[in-house]
Length: 153
Length: 153
DNA sequence: TATTGTTATACTCTATAACTATA
DNA sequence: TATAGTTATAGAGTATAACAATA
Image 1 (spheres, rainbow over the protein chains, first blue to last red):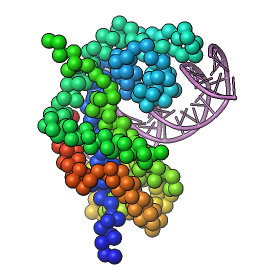
Image 2: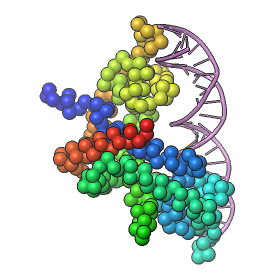
Image 3: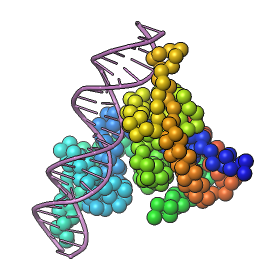
C-alpha cells in the first residue's frame, strides 16, 4: 500500500486542469488585448460581433446557441453595441418574438479590422507547433472535448 | 489573391483560442463542482488549500508566485479560510513583514478528502486519451505555454 | 401554457490604489 | 525607500428570477 500515496498526491503545477487553465488564461489575454484596446469591446461583445460577422440576421437565441453565452449576457452586450452603433435589429416578421440582429456599417468595418488581427495572434501562437503537431493537437482536444461533455451530463 | 479571403476569414467555432476556451470552461466546471459542492470553497480558496496541502508554512507572497493569484485575492481567500478554521498563520520571526500560513487539522482533513476526488475527475477526463496521447498532449501544451509566455511579454 | 427577450436584484470578482507595518 | 499584506472603492461580470410580448 506504499504507492497509494503517490497515486493520490496532488502537485498543482502538474495537475492537468490547472495547467490547462493557466494556458487558457494566457491565450485569452493575448487575444483580448486586440479587441479591448482600440475598440473597447467586452469579451461578450466581441463574441457577438464575431458571430454576426460570420452570419448576419441571427436572433439572440440563435447567438446564444452558437456562442454558449446566456440570453441575458447577450441582451446586455447587444444593448451596449446598439448604443455604440455597432448593430441594429429588426423584428422577425414570421414570429414577432424574435429580434434579428445585424451589423451596421460601423460594426462591419470594425469586424474587418479585428479579424485579421486576431487571426494573426492565433497564427503567432500556433507557430510554436508544426502543421502535424497542430493537427495532432486538434484531434486530442476534440477527444477531450467529447469526453468532458459526457462527464458534465 | 483569391485565397486571401480564406486565410483572413474567421469561423469562430474553429478559432483555436475560442475552442480552447470552451474546453477549459467545461474542464474547470467539472473540477469546481468537487470543491464548491460539499465544502463551499471558491476557486481561489481551493488553490490556496491545494498549495498549502502540498507545502505548508508559505507566505502570501510565495503562494502568489505559485498560483498566479494576486496578493489581494489571496488576502481575501485567506481571510475567509481563517474564519472557517481551515488555516492559521504565524508571523515570520526572521522578517516580520511575512505571515506564514498553515493548514489547521480541519483544513488538512478537507484537503485529504478533496485531493482523491479531483484526481479522480482528472483521471476520468484523461481516459479519453491513451498514455501515449497524454504524453503527446502534455508536450504540445508545453510548447504552446512557452510560446504564449513569449507573446505576452 | 410555452417561448423570446428585457429588467431587477443581489452577489461575486476584479483592478487600482491608498494604507499599515516592517525592513 | 522598498516590500508584505490589508483595506476601500468602484466597476465588471454572474445568477436567479420576475416580467412583457408574442405564440
